[in-house]
Length: 168
Image (tube, rainbow, N blue to C red; front, side):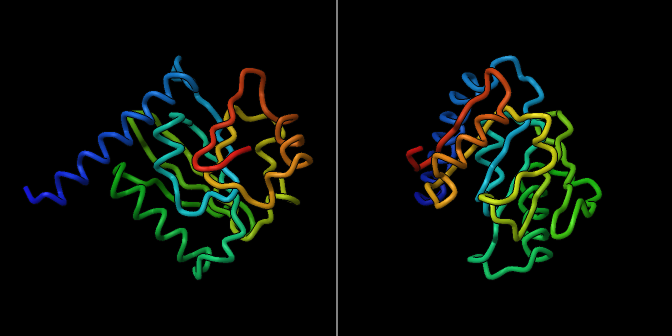
């Protein structure tokens, strides 16, 4: 193997090890968690590995991507297929929102992605029943005390905030 390939494998091993350690804290019983990820971009692997979530609810305004929702959806399908195998039938969930069923680690899962939504002013209807994990990868305008207070109110008892590369 080339040095670059070995380094890539080592980095992936370290990332998955770290993700498994977080998962042991966030989801030790392998429960069917609901994960909310505002400003998700195209990042599905990290929250999935770190939480073992069954339902992932992503919201992003997608203004900086240079992609239409249809193009972004195609990228998600490719990413899920590449890393996890079969992607079920994608359905339109709402205007510029899609439901993507897939299997990962022997469990049926679903990703609900709302494109072109401002998380400061939009709360996914699925969250009216609560959610278990708030996942964030970067600080942004939506990480204000008012917004985070609203999100804490919706979080189920025993829920977790997972932050990657940002301070909340």
